[in-house]
Image 1: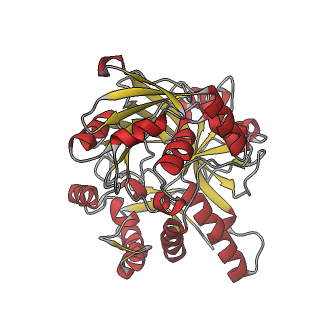
Image 2 (image 1 turned 135 degrees about the vertical axis):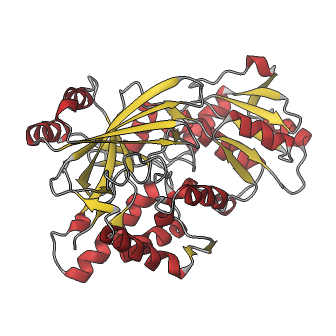
Length: 427
């Protein structure tokens, strides 16, 4: 993939030597309560730019979109924001403790790349998207002409040579930005590298590599729609909207971790745990287990189910059911992901939920940490499933085949901070 340095817009380092009070998570993980928390930290917090007070239908209040545009202009005028004059790459280090309790360092760089259609040799995607979220982000982009958050891409580099080169080039960085996410404890340190020789070498290394969208499918499709909109408006073929801001992390980097998202169900009509368990015997071998024995792995054939009392049991998909599932899917490789097994066999066949139910998150609750999963069962959820760790190699292969997985099949942690660098479009 072609990598392009850019003149990013950043919070003025002279006024903001530490970014802890102005960074925020991506818009789609900020609840109304969290938004109030971030705004209380600083009137310059990035959450003010990416989420409004309250969403009605597909959109926030009308004033939010125009207000964000005007706020960006005001912050430029008072010197709170400044745009770099020299194109560069932003090399981001994130120090974090994962849901697994282990400490890690994830490294990746922020740059532009050309928008490209999905394909095995270009951009690989893996999640389904929904029109509502795209409408909101398209309106924000159209009004502000700004990319506030990066698309999270991964790429294959067996020797991790790109990251090693950037690590060796830290002495050439012209700026060091840092900020701590107080909500998650993630330490973000970002080095701005404008050295032309280093950038050229990174470009050469990345040239033929396809990329995989780890996080940001809705934003990628938003920018694709925005590109079409601007091409029609300007009638020019070469415009700024042809390029998108991305964060690029090597799939072989030890710090790139993919975690599961667990599921509980609440409010299912006419639900009986005993009836569910009876039907599960048609597809699974069922084995009771102790919580102390609970251990997550990459086992796509085994699901862990728990009732409202928090009692877990292992569900091992029978060979016949597994073969039947493989043949019923558009591609057999999808059966190697446990969220597909859960959705196709249990949610749709047994619980009889529809695609519309899933699209609108009816009955289903998502949990990124195991404590939240158990708390949901203690407070009214009827049943839940603990998911295993996704296999990064399977995900990359699925993306290359242009297939889609159920929502929240992957959880790349930590999230990318909004507020390290923005990208303002010039057309």
